[in-house]
Image (tube, rainbow, N blue to C red; front, side, top):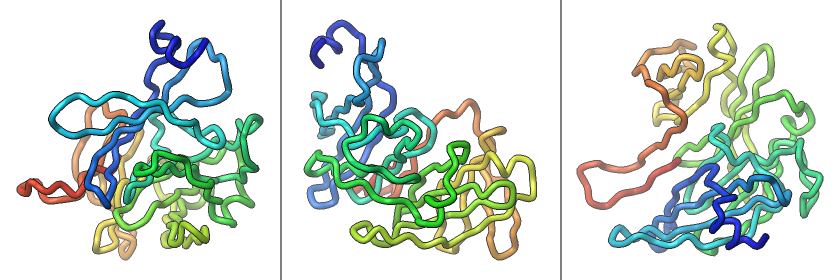
Length: 244
C-alpha cells in the first residue's frame, strides 16, 4: 500500500514528534515519525510541518533516515540550531543505506528538510558499545551531547564539538553512588556547570554539582513521558526556541 493509502486507512500513526527552529529564517517546524501497523517496510516514515502561528499547517512526507533510529519517546533525540539529532538503532541496521557504527547519530536539517550524513559516535564509546548499554542523546543549548553508562561505575557525558569532523569531548564523568543514579537522565547543563537531571524511576528533578558531587532536589514531576526545554525570555515576544 502506498504512503497516502496508509494514512487514509489509519494504518500509520504518530510515534513521536520533535520541534525545532531554523535559525536563518526564524521559522518553527514540527517533525514526526510514523509507525506502520502491521509493519510493511523496514523504512521509517517521516513528515514535516511548518508552524506559522496563524493557520494549521499540512504535513509533508520526507525521506526516511539513512538507517533505523530510536523514534519513540525514550529520550534519544535533540534539536539544536535547526538540526534534529536521533540516536541510531545499531541493533537494527540490516536495511541501512550506509555503514553505521555503534553509537552513531542521524541528523535532519530542518531548513533543507533533508537528512545529513550520519555522525559517528565517540570512538571510545563505539569500541565499548554493547546492545545492553543505554546511550541517550540530550541537548545543551551549545552542543548536542551523548550519554554513555559505563556500568557499574559511572555515567559519561560526551559533547559533539565539531559536527563536520565528528569531534567529541568527554566533559563529565559522574559516579554512581545511589541506585536511582542508574536511571537518571540529564536535561541541561547550566552556565555554572551544574547539570539538571530527571530521575526516571521517581520523576524527581534534581541539580547535580560536579564540584561537590552533590544533588539538590528541584521539583517532583507527575506522570511525565517526555520533556521540552525552552530557551529564551518568557516576557519577550521574540522566542529563542524550544528544544524537545
